[in-house]
Length: 408
Figure 1 (tube, helix red, strand yellow):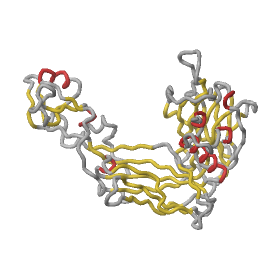
Figure 2: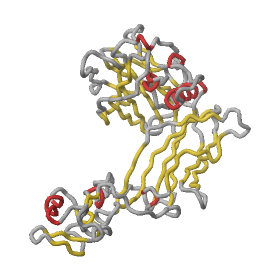
Figure 3: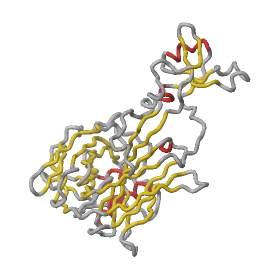
Figure 4: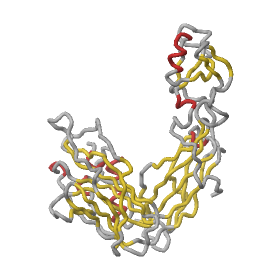
C-alpha cells in the first residue's frame, strides 16, 4: 500500500528540537496546514505551504484555501525579521495514486523565498507563519558550526554512459555524524539544430543559408539553471572517518546537454542533528520506499511546528534550520558522447504546407533522407519547432552567469 500522506511534508534543513505528535491521518480534518521549511543561514531559504484536502470528494473540484497571501518570515532571538516573498504561486495537484484508508492528499501550493544569506550564525532562529487565520511557529534552533566541503569530483569510466558527481565532506567543528546535502546546476548548452536553410514565403522556395536575424550563435548557445529542490540526508555516525568521501550526489547521461560545453554544480551542505536526520530519512523512505513492510508509517514521523494561536489546531510538516556552506565545481565537455539530434518537435510537411508550418514558427532544418524512397509519406525537409533551433525557447537564457569564467 502506497503511503500517500507521507508526501505531505518536507524537503528541509537542520533543526534543533522536535515537537512530536502522532496524528490520526485517516481522520485529519480538511484544511490542515502543511509546511516544508528549509531555512539555510548563509544561503537563500525556502518555505512551501499547502493544505490537506479530501482525496475523494462529492464535489467535482474541491476548493483549497488560497495560501498565496500568507505571511512567512524567519526571526532571530534579537527580534530581527527576515520576510518571505512569494516566488512560486503553486498550482492544482492531480494524482492517479490512490490507496485504501487514506482520505486526504497533500495539495502543493505556494513557495516563499527568504533572504537569509547575511543572517548572523551566532543567534537562534525560528520560522513563523500567519495563514488560515492562525499563527504558527517552529521551535527555536541554535546554529551548529557548518561542515567543510573538501572536494567535488566528476567520475566516468571508459565504458560508462553516465557522469557521477561525487562529493567529499568533513563534519567540521560541530560534527554530529549527520549531514544534509543539496545542489543546484548551471550549464552552457546548444539547441538541437542550427538552421542552414532559408524559406522564402513569397516564392515558396527553400535555399541553403542562415535565416535572417538568426545570427551565428545568437539562438544556438545558452545557459540553463535548475535546482532540483531535493535534500539528501547522510548518516556517517558509524564510520571511523568524520565525514564522507566520494559520496555520489548526482548523475546525468553522457549524451545530456550538460556536457555540451561547460557544466557547473553548486553543492550545499549543512550539519543535521540526529532527530532531523531521522525525520528526513523516514520521509525519504515513505516517499520512495514503495510497499515495504518495514517502511515507517506516516504517524511515526514527528513534526516540529505548532499553532501558537490555537494549541489544539493541527499542523503537519517539518522545518530544518542550519548554517549552509557551498562550493562550486566545473566540468568541461570531456565526457560528452555525441549522438543524433532529437526528432521531437520535427515535422515533414509537403510543399503545399510549407507556408502553414512556417507561420507556426517552424523552420527547415535538414534534408529528409527517406523522402526519395517514399515521397508520398513525408516531405523533402525536416522542419523543427522553435525549441529545436532556439535555445531560449528550449528553456535557456542568453545572460551569462557572473561567475562563469571562474576556474573553480
